Each structure stands twice: as C-alpha cells, then as structure tokens.
Amino acid sequence: MPIKVKSLAIVSLFALPLWLGGNASPNVVLLMGDDHGWEETAYNGHPYLHTPALDEMAASGLRLDRFFSASPVCSPTRGSVITGRHPNRYGTFTPNRSIRPEEMGIAHVVKAAGYRSGHFGIWHLGPVKLESPTNPGAMGFDEWLSHDNFFEMDPYLSRNGKPPERFKGESSEILVEETIRFIGAAKQNEKPFLAVVWFGSPHEPYSGLREDLALYADLPAEYGEESVKLTSMETGLPVRRPFDEVLRERYAEITAMDRAIGQLRDYLAEAGLLENTLVWYCGDNGIPSSGNIDTPFRGQKGNVYDGGIRVPGIIEWPQRIKTPRHSNVITVTSDIFPTLCQLVGQPVPDRPLDGISLLPLIEGKLDQRPQPIFFWEYTNLIGEDAEPYIDPELQAGTTPLVKQMNGKFTRNFRNNHHPDITDNDFKGPRAVVDNRYKLVIHEERDGEISRELFDMILDPAEERDLSKDLPRLAESMEKLLGSWQRSVLNSLTGADYGSVASRERSLHRKP
Image (cartoon, rainbow, N blue to C red; front, side):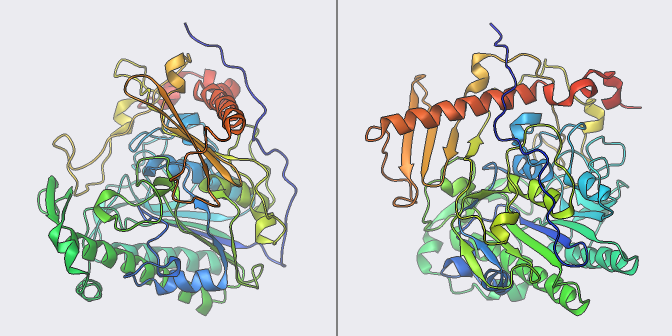
C-alpha cells in the first residue's frame, strides 16, 4: 500500500542573514574534478602525484579536511551543488538521470544579485542542447560551453546549446581559456561573476600529454604486475590494461587539470581579481577501481563508505581568508548553494535544503556542524512504464564521448514522475554522519538489514563496528536518517513545487 508522506521541518535553511564583506560583491569560481578522490593530491600526502596549484590553494586558504560529495557518483553530486538539495529529492538518482526543470539553481540566485554566470565543462544534469528544459541556460546560466557527460582531450562541446563542435587540445586548458574569456568580459562590463568549471579529468578513459606522462614514468614495478578494467580509447568498449600504464595516464590528467587551475589563478592575480574572488575546488566522488591504490579509507566510487564520498575541498579567498588554516568540520557539496546565497545577499528558496552556509566557517566562527549530513543511494529505480517527467526527445544527448553504451557514443537522460511512496522506496545503501560518528546501513541479499556504526575520529578507515557497543546511539541515528528519508521522498513526489507541479505537463514536452 502507498505510504502518505508528510512534509517534515528538518534541515531547511530559510531567511539566512545577509553577509557582506568588502566594498564590492565577491566573484565566485567553482571548480570540480571528475572522479577525483580525497587522497589524490600532494598536499594530502599522495606518494606520486604533482599538484602544485592545489597545494598552493591548500597552503594559503581554507583546507576542508572532512569534505564530502553528496553522492558517491557524479550526476547526483553535481545536482547538489546547483540546488543545495540532496539529488534524490528531484530524481537525479544516478548518472544520466536529469535534474527537474522546477529546481531553483545557484545561477538563478546570483542573477538576482546582479551577477553574470557561466558554465564550462561537464554538465551531466540533462542534455546541453538548446531545446532541453534542463540545460545550463534553463538552470539560470547566462552562457555555457558544456558537454552532456564527460570527455577527454580534443573534446566535443556545445556553446550555448548549439550543435557540438570539436576543440583541439588538452581539455582542462580549453575550459580555463574559455573561463578566462568569460571573466574578462564580465570585468570589462563591471559585473561580478560566477564561473562554474567542471573538468572532464580525471574520469576514465585516460589520456595525457607527453610531458605529463613523463612525470610518472617510474611508478613502482609492482603496479605493472596487475591489470585493471576500464574503457578503451580506441573502441570505447571495456578492456583490461596494466595498472601502471593506467595510473600514469590518470596522474597525467590530474597534473594537467592542476596546471590549468594554476593558469586560472595566475590570470585572476594579473587582472587584479584574485583578492576578492572566492575559488572553491572539490571532487565529485571518490576514486574508481581503475585508479585506486593504497587508500586510507574504506571503499571507492559508488558506495557510501568514505572512499566513495570523501573528496578534496579547498576554499581560497584572500580578502576574507587572510590566515591559512585547515578545518575538520564535516562539510559537503550541498553546502555550496546556501553559502553562495548568503554570500550574495539572497534568500534561499522556500523548500527543504540539505546544506548549510559555510560563511561562519570561512570567518572562523564554526567549529562543529549544527546538523548531520545524510547520504543515500536510491535503488528502487522506476521502470520503463513510469511516466517520463520530461519528453524523451528533449532528454536525448548530442555531445559525443569515447565510452560506448548500448552501441551509442553519447548518452540520453531520464527523470520520472513519482507520485506514490512505498516501503521499497526507503531501501538502498545509506549513511548519516555527525561530528564524530557515522552510521552505515545496507540491505543484504537475504533481506536482512546490516548496520555499522563508526567513530570517525578514532577510526577514519571504518574498520571497527560499534553498533553493538553503542546501540542507543545507532538507534537514534537510524531514526534521524529515516525521518530525513521521508522528507526526501516527499520532495520526490513534487510536493516542493506547489502549484508549479500542477501545470500542464506540456511544459516539459517537445514544442
């Protein structure tokens, strides 16, 4: 029987106070690496990687040592950045599930504050073509040079929804060149700007420039004795290759991305913009199997252990972060939206959010998170007979990519109406993290529920289960997680959109 879900007043943030600093509106640059896990930076102690630009940011800004992606996979995390909401609230459960057109995006918010906004690189929240109701422009961006999915060197990108064209060169540098052009135009027009730069690196399949590959020519011989599965650059199909070759290419991509970030920072400094520009770097999820060496965390991309959701996080803003420091406060990609809302003096939307503003943390006034962070891989995916939320023709992708799926070298998207909530909708790997403890819940194949409780201060590798030692704590955290799930599922039915959801569905049909 369907369960009627009532709206819960949980972690919403309404009417945040204004926070204004300096004499001019701060500029914002949001940078994100694709599949870039926490340990893949030199500043976090990686034994081989060269990441001088990220190291400089970490040394001069605010290093977020317990920063998480909202999801262990890509599209959902990107939705959390745009909306400040957990992606299950609007059906972006997995890669190639689109966002919903009714969602309020961060570009909408900054536009109301007089900003110009641009998106460059991976979008992955729906097709980037002009007629898509979920392209970057529909989500508020003034301009975009974007890809539906991910890409390697010589990428195909769509400018402002036009047919994709091929750009020759290293993809991270191409994106930064376009970002610099965008920023230069905003500066000339005396407009504050939001630039969202979502790199295609280091997502597989991997490729690298000769000089970057040379940096990793002497990886330990034992890696050459293993092989890993990934996509072939030649065929787009799965292939097994020696691990040392794969790592060399992956690390070359990270180094090229880092160099492009350095070029962007150099430009901001030369243009006199660095001082009052907030630059925020993070990854979108943990490391996949094709790049995972000795990790300090349990798990990898695709699961809710820290190996799947703990990512690099750095905020650099010289005007407000004058003293370098690092923070162990738990933070998440969903925090970006409410942080920027408060930064530009705009209210957050009147709907449940899952992030909080980190401006108190930037100011050095926050040493513990006031509410937990929730994670949930939704597994009750709706079948083909469910009513599409958006016309399938509008969800068809156009930008080519190397990786083949179902005989195609592009990706289509989907989102579905979900009017009723059932018991099955609460299933799937999930977790709740507070300032010290983390509860992880899985359904086993026999239907039994597995519960694990970890002390993340004493046991960051999630090796010792404390659920039997601290049963009351585990029970209270599970109840909190269940209440949050009910709120998320209420959002999934479309309840957050009010009268908007009852409009004619032709809004999301092909014209």
